[in-house]
Amino acid sequence: MILKIISAAEVLFEGEVKAATLPGSMGAFTVLRNHASLVAMLSAGKVRYELPDGSEHTREITGGVADVDNNVINVCVY
Image (tube, rainbow, N blue to C red; front, top):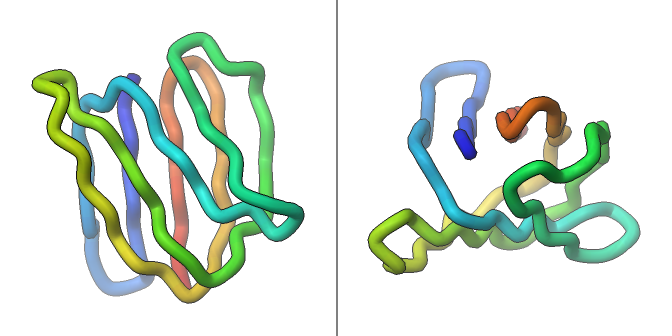
């Protein structure tokens, strides 16, 4: 599954992940491989993601929008 975190100015992260947890406006949610398609508003918080080697990473965001479709998670942040 591919995670892309982008802002208006740059690509903050793009790569293969095993899982991603996003700070949704109605609560955090986790996306795994073959997740149903969705579009969600994001609140300020941390995007957490696990790489294929098992390492975990976080990135602080102030809000944004997530689009999940066909094992690609596009996160556009403010």
